[in-house]
Image 1 (cartoon, rainbow, N blue to C red):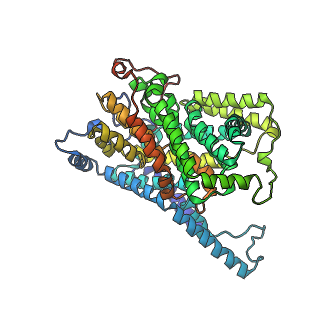
Image 2: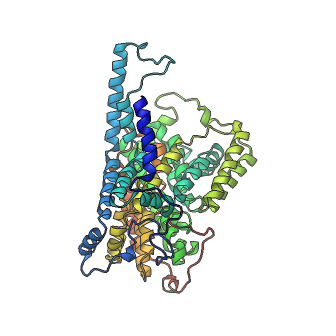
Image 3: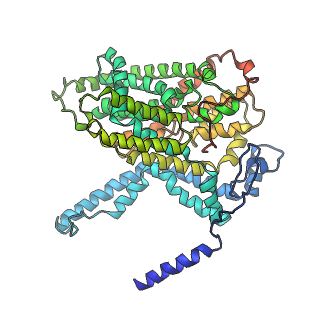
Length: 546
């Protein structure tokens, strides 16, 4: 033990003077005055404008960039491994359950007394816990940041990695998602949203199938005004309460999840501030909310209505069976509501205060010091009105924030190959390419990179944004709110949500929305839009997070 303490002391003395060095506060930026007006402090990733022009096709461009910066290949390989890990997460969860079962049998053989700590704490299986952690999709990208850090230190230095994470990456979006999820999941906000949607569900006598249709149509459109993460939180919680609790068959469960993700992704296009991929380009391209409604929003609503209607017709038998079960006709049992689902009325003024906190968070979405300060006041208010609240759980919001923060770190190193792919495609191929690329990277990253391309045509702008929002439901990483929905609903899927099941569930509505954006006509402002100077939205946008 003494030698261990001596070793730790030596490491503490040695580390600050190691070859990769400590980060000096006086460190000069590695790249100053980039073409977009930003400054980059770390030596990596190499700015796109600093690569020499290469004659030839996209393969020649990628080969030249890989040779100029070998770290590019390592960073993208690590990102690919992280994506593959998300597909393997369900397998790790199954292993975790198996090891946990084996451990329980072993404890039973040894006897209950032997399995207890002197203070009464049960012995835990390290192996089962480890694989449970590896099976948490929300932890995947944060876990693989360790690999990215090792590659950055190998090719560059520890100081550059600290500068990249500490100064060049912006984590406003992950922090915002944590706060907006916590507020949107509060009992007064959820009850208010439930009361709104109950008017539509009443048309179907308030059955689970009626709630299913109401939530999947209304909450995505609501996302254009309260932001997509808040809409996802409310939609997922209401589906959990009104639909998933009745244990739908796997095919319907995955179809519902995929439909929710696609609808939320396109539902935020009625305004220019609610959907992350739109927010990335709205100020630079001068797209107002009126422009979004005319060119994207109404098409998205049509796609949502068609997709939800077709899924309702396709799954109507299973939905009606769930409705029969819910009203007690099959099992004759009426469950007593749990404490969190109690029907005690909430004073209107408490609900109004919660909605005001929600509005404040949306309004100050790009200023963490303001919305975090508001969140602290919100927590104080919930404590003062605790008898009207449910217990606030930050586990799910923090896991989602951790997921998005990891994606921000990895995504910032992928521009070297994504940008050439985007710029090498014509409009039709660009939309399809953006839809496919979105499945492997956050759609906000796709549109942000497109916004850096000079003299991009209006039709190309339409194509990349339409493709980015269309593909936002295919995977959990395709759209920032998706991890929030998966975190809330994963408990209803045995061994977690299967990426393949999610993809298949989202494929049909993705195709429907894609066709809506392609076939339905654009607005009349196409010609004049190029002459409109960029406008600053109600909330000025800080540096992009990806």
